Image 1: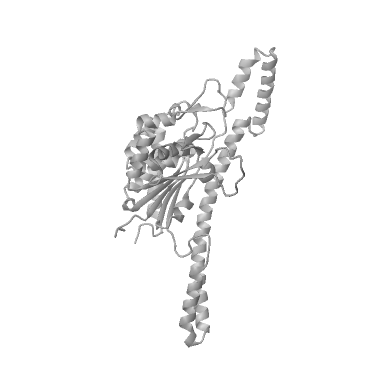
Image 2: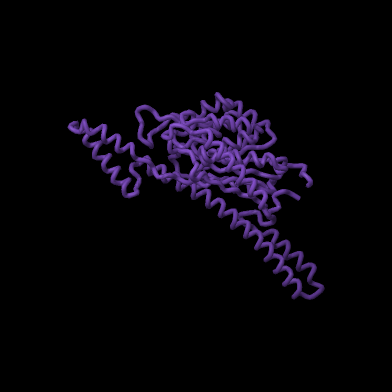
Length: 384
């Protein structure tokens, strides 16, 4: 197989928390063993994909594995003592953990700027915008070959700032948070890069356990002894209402409602991104067939002396047609979808520990899913 002189493959990595990044590590390890890796020129990542993409672009997948195998919930986010209920602000400890075990933001940004593979990460703009602006889409995009090193390093941290648990991060004067709100699966950006000739992507498919609300029962039991105090009576009434809502399958409190909405937004925009890619690819194929049929039919019906010129005119008209996507090429892609299912880790601080054996199982699952996808792929992804 011949190898292109210039890179022509983009990798796309979705968000997915601790489960997603472990699966993505397996995905990247398998790709790294494949001849395809020598053609990779870009990695597009959001949230967990931003962290995994950083280490892949720097050729540090072994370091990423060691980092993840030792990572525990308190290394990523820690509840503040005064806030023990879900939904309260948490200390975002992941930046300090990354700085101590992988590298400072500026250090990572500098290394990425010099790397052959360009990393592009996405965050959500939550800055205060008092003036209405219909052109603002609140998506922040940072490319490692064009963004200042310090800002690039902080953008990676902002992209991975889980909005339901931690406060946002300042990046070069902009307040930014988890990119999953606006671009959880940045496939479209890879497609719109005119230098990209093929895409290999991993999309994490989340599965959520029923929220454990036993903490409400424990809180109620502790407070019952102080029920004579008016503020405590009011709090007990709120806890009872929360329990009743939970029994009906409703969010028990605003914190849980925000988490549910976050899950909907992340899953929805990832599904739409993939659906858009499928519909666009179908349109490209159908437009190509339509052009061939129309040109052939028109030329056949024209007088012999008119055919050559008519054929050229029709081809030119089709080529100049304006569509909101590239309609003159087919872009091969391989999308691996992975879920944690029954072996998934609890992506919050409430789990206590993230066992190493489960982490290794998720990495292996990502590797195996990718191996199967490559073996069964009928696309031209492997090159000319």
